[in-house]
Image (cartoon, rainbow, N blue to C red; front, side, top):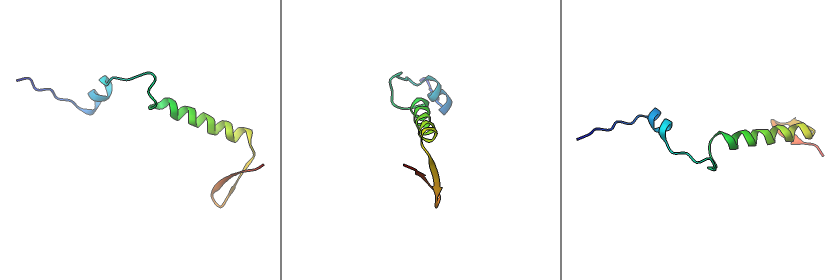
Length: 55
């Protein structure tokens, strides 16, 4: 009988991945870039703790 022990590191290190998968760091960085672009191109102010874009 062969005993296979897996820990979290080995699962994350050797798990199959797909370059076209919609998860991981890529979508997070793209969303962050869009937020930065939105704030750079528009005027905004804080009102009662909420970010308000000006027209």
